Image (tube, rainbow, N blue to C red; front, side, top):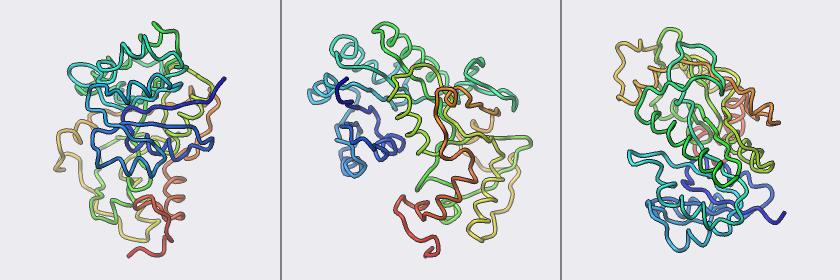
Length: 301
């Protein structure tokens, strides 16, 4: 076994968390559509490349040396942009490839009326974006079968972490406590996405895995808990029926389920942040909740 070499299509928030967790110092390259984001990728430990839907010679060369491919690009009407651009390259030229990880969403399950779902549950996608996700998952699994390589589908719940969390929302005045009867959501800290990816990649494990916390919870409870940590008054409760919401935000509330995570645990992964309380407490204590830069939680100016 030689050195692992990683390539991330769509090195955004989760991809940068993965790179920051690179304890072994493996080479990681990643793409973005925007050259102005190159510096942020470099800061996270990613060699940046531009991908706008077509392969450049640099990307093709890099893929030829890649052992572990991570895909975090949303599907489009015309299909998965990475498969459309790189499918033939993956099939014919990635001789070193050992494993593929595809970052999907628990949105593929759709609405289950608050019931528990695991990886065997029916996918009943409601939104168009989730319908396209189901198709993309199947296309990646099919590709893996064709080339005889394991594909891990990571179905992620609501992603949060440094700079993207309810503590920051309360601070900047955008937090709202929407209340919809019996509504719950699962969440996942970006460091657990990174941890799960590293765990699966190290073992070349394929399959479908819900990467989500242990405790689906009403969103208004999370806001209230964060306000308590900050010693501020939580924003007032707003009935869902009268709330002003974007169509996308409203669509999230049209899906209610409790997502189980036994499969990734059975694969040997242990969550760093098994529930929102542990995570919010840690981010508040470390002071990295605002933008990822450590600072004392007492200095809130």
